[in-house]
Figure 1 (cartoon, rainbow, N blue to C red):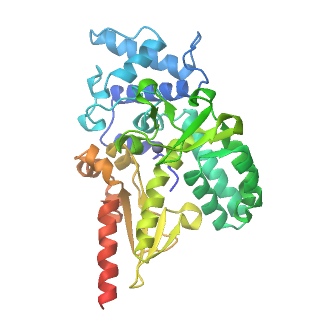
Figure 2: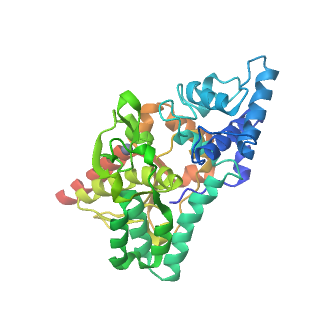
Figure 3: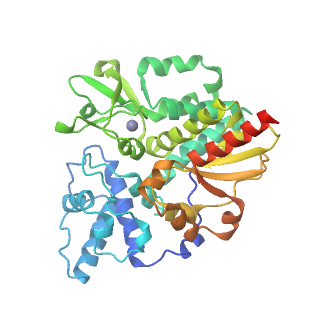
Length: 379
Ligand SMILES: [Zn+2]
């Protein structure tokens, strides 16, 4: 399901206080800076969110007798070097894992955790942007009475985050994409020249997004999931003179990255011989799985770094298209990173969602589905 941040009333549960609000403001400011074309070249006046973040961090530091960051470049260094848990803020201990930072220390781009916190700032452009695009696609496809067009759009965003200008032109021949062609054209932007080495771009062999050159380390992938799986492995290369385009960053972070987990689960279940509908009912949820005994599972896949924020946002899945059981599936690696994932999620999850949803990893769900299909075969 498209990430829909929870309404404000949820924020009263479990998490509150000035310092949590400050963390949100900082994350929002950092994300806003990330959207500036050349973040090395800050000049006064700073963007409003970033200035607000800087002022508030400086104040918090002064009140606690800690040296404050003096400028935006200072704040950036802070966010890249200091894990959130080591900041002079009194945050609930389950809000960040040890070592979690707001900026990637190597690429200095916002981490997924930073985006997740930034989404809780009601006025950041990023939240609106990613939601507007996906809700825009839903409305165009609904208007054309074409749920298969929404599925095709979503699959394109997940499976092809990088296109050459020529490949983009070829999409005009795809019947399912007709209602969303203008939207697609808007979302693919020229890849930044700084991402090329020796005249070519490299796509990540895992998520297919463009890798970022990282000096002596070779390449870096911006997706949490890929970085957890070891050093970046360059896959497809694109010559810079081919007019290489990539999706806008909020879509890459919130649709392409998490989408890998959605399509991986689709492949795992399809390999068991199960029929799987993707993003049915214009994205009511992510997967609708038909079991051999006639039962239907509804699944939302959430590749989220923060179990606390995920718990606060959790809500029962829509009743239509109908299903017999509902699951919230988290990629296994998130549980490796946060062994307390389940507990922290449960602590923050509202009772109605806890009752309606089963939280499990992709592996647990795969095993459950395998058991059911094997039993059906024996029967
Ligand atoms: Zn990757």
